[in-house]
Image (cartoon, rainbow, N blue to C red; front, side, top):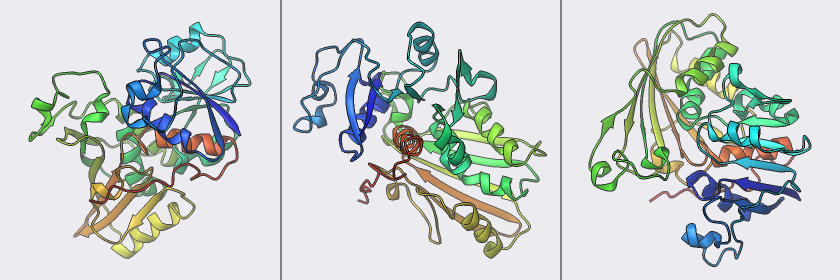
Length: 325
């Protein structure tokens, strides 16, 4: 059994990691750390866990584990590792944005590998430290990376995507308050979303000549979880040729699938899957991409990376039931 500890277990991503690891056949959840909830039952904070576990949060760090998942806020993961001596033998999976970019992908002797399995599977298998991708970054990259790998991104990429309110984290804010969010849509960080940086690095890793814009308009949706993205580009290939490009790229992917039908969000909510669909409209290729932002976009992908790092079945603990209705 792989012994795993969670740092920052009271938030959304920490809670999702707990739910998965409690039911993972090859993992022992050794402890869940929270500075503000030490001594409280996990089910006092994550009330859906009543009857699932009697574990309590701890405010004491333990290092007698094989891996730590850092489910803390952006900026806090680096601070935690700077202030806390962690043995080199303990592997780190960080869910914040602190180590995703090449310029910031190290601290001390720890070098972080970007944890998108569909891009870096073999590097992840050999890695000691993983920087888990962002939720929008995961959804968008899985939509466009096959085109980059085939050298087909020869113009600007146009993206519109809508995310659920859990993407903003657990802390209450005006834009995540129920009264503001329900029956409402709004744009934020148009053309300037922070996930564009990691998307750009991955695209250029596959297609170094890419020098065009990724024009990204994110929307806040009036639902709790999930991301649906529409991406369109100029593409000279036929639909059949594009389908082969995507089919070949994802032939070995454990959790990314290309559908030949119109797709919708509830296909992936409560799962660690990404589902894609492709359409041709004249010279335009439309790619639709859907994920659950807390699972494939965060904690589920972290467990997928954990599985790869410890030579487990890549889908272990992640055979989750879609919501469907």
